[in-house]
Image 1 (cartoon, rainbow, N blue to C red):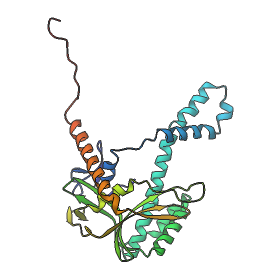
Image 2 (image 1 turned 90 degrees about the horizontal axis):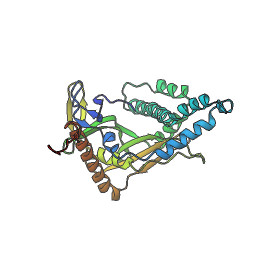
Image 3 (image 1 turned 180 degrees about the vertical axis):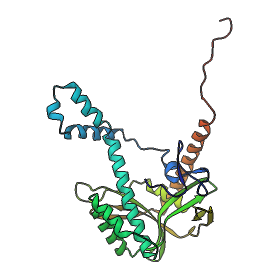
Image 4 (image 1 turned 90 degrees about the vertical axis):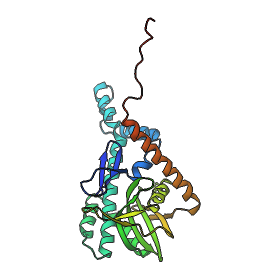
Length: 281
């Protein structure tokens, strides 16, 4: 995952400061959502088993406990490797998308360089599909990678893109996704709605991180929330439905309270202490 200008990696997850060099003050949107992690035990087991079956050393290792232990040890981290590789790929695709927006805004950009980086990793198809999506939706960027802040609840985050599409202001969250067996881009996780709902509740947006300059968030009303799944074969655009937004926002608010409780408990010392038996017992 990329590191926005004011973001900090902390023991309590990613947090944001108000300016460059400032102390972390509030959790990020993704850190808050991460207070309700998915159950990935089954997936992790599948990845480990697959890694064993596909290991080229397996045939020669049969009958050798030492070699089998080595294969098992490597396979145990298969899920972590996959996650890290997917995150790095997502960073590269997001960086390319940002450069495309900067180019259209007439700002300094390196679209060609970032496309070459994707091609060097065998990921050029992501750039091709993104370009097709950008043109077909006639995206008019307003602000790529914009950092926002909510004082009332206490969180911050960096939105992938604010743009106009079809005359409407849209908050857009990109998700780089793999391809299913039938050649379609894999669907978005419904939790993206929480992320979009939190972004829509922003109260300020960053103007200058070095000076710590902020201004009121100008998109408080009549905003379309879009999750965009970026794949190698296609791009899937989905809109967060109005009916689920209030509940999604309440869930995000509740998870923010979970984060706060954990943060407070961490500073209070041990939760349990040993008690000796009563005197004279």
